[in-house]
Length: 418
Image (tube, rainbow, N blue to C red; front, side, top):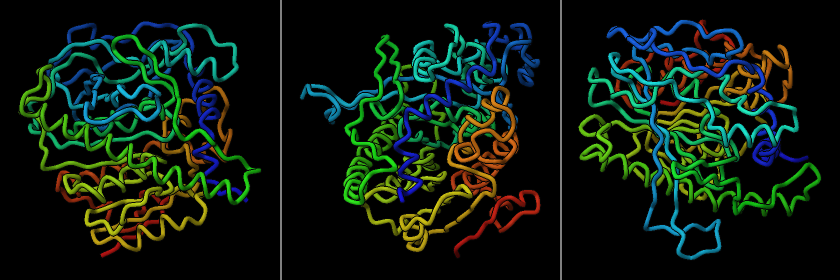
């Protein structure tokens, strides 16, 4: 039988379809909510709930308002294996979420660009009107200075699942930023549904991993797919290391003025969902600048030695089947290890999809993909354990939630090494 985690990686088009359907939850008006009528108080923005026809993502729980910025980066040292032109260089998009100056003013960031909205509408096959993506309300503002309080801020790098968008994790990333982390979410070009660059180019999914398996795939076909995914992970690991290089340079002198002197590059974590979680383990294996890593329900592809010295948390869905890559990595950890399994969670529980799909599909829809947890509870659990881990092992503060099973979260079975 086809390994369930493989089918997840192979279901890029299904994910796009589900996400497009999710965006229907808030079809209606298209006006962003300004911070307190355009005159934010220096104690925070305190936005009112959005109006009728708008769908608000879960609100961040931290003390900081959140800012965001998208940057295009080019690694001149690496070619692009997904294109035929040998002169092409590896290009990436990175979206920063960060604790913002509470006195700053800016427009709310869109959940998706119009091009991403078009892509998801077309992929869903549903009769969705143009511009539907503007109905979703985020909590991060564009063009807002980074907060002085807590400077320099610890840094987190995040990677999306294979074929997904960085936007699919906005709730988690905004929440981490509201607690004082600068989060850099990478769009791995050609392995994401769509990468929309500031110059207007929209690069669709076009991965070199083109032979996607199916339930009818033979054992030989599956083995070949595993080998390709193992090898391809090095591209994502190199992406993350390059982004960290760029952040290190920007902390010294940022041409855009946002990050200079404001990043603590001695406190860096790396995390991701699905294939992005494998990237986190791979990055920790080869680069000790990453102080800790976290995998959200990802099969741990890659060929690196996984006897990781850094603290590492593996958080699994209830229906994540027996997985030798998880067992071997967890067993070989040299640093502090944690293994959590969430009852009622499925693979996409760790993204925004359950919470934005519920209003249109109803509670309990698509349990194999979205899980059976109440979506708000799913967000709470994912955010709480992710935040506890990075607070403990990136920021260096006590996180009692990591001491063992918690009565506050009975859905989570939890163990730790050492």
